Image (tube, rainbow, N blue to C red; front, side, top):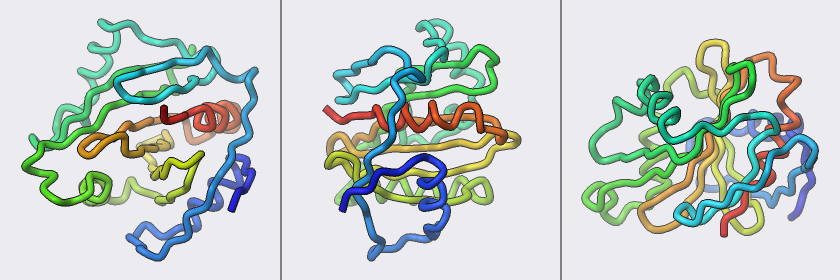
Length: 198
């Protein structure tokens, strides 16, 4: 089934989903509304097998700036040894209130065993996030099964979206926006809609 959704409707859809695992959940095909005027140039990352567009006027950080930015992210510095999250891109808006991080997420072979990486990672996230997690949803975008978490961290809302790119690796997009997100939500919608697995 194909449905054309705007982000407000998508949020209603996702917030209506249970935070608990549901093997019988309905996974719909979703086509996003994309406004090109709200997006930057296309970014292609062959190692992540993905292309996307960040919201317009969200500046891409250079390598050194990215390293310095990541150094202040406690959540990335306190990971268990069997999970590796490597930031590949960071984009920040002019006010520094909103930012996008694109990561490669991988597990050691010993941790993966015969378990699916998505199930393993979701178990880790559910345990770690606790009350920060508002809702979880899954949808199919152009043949790619994507999982999205909506989280709250202080004054920010976080949209965490990830999908599998090979046996032991995921690509993850984290959009951090202020709770009063009306001015950014269409750009976020368009950016998520631009994400394409190669």
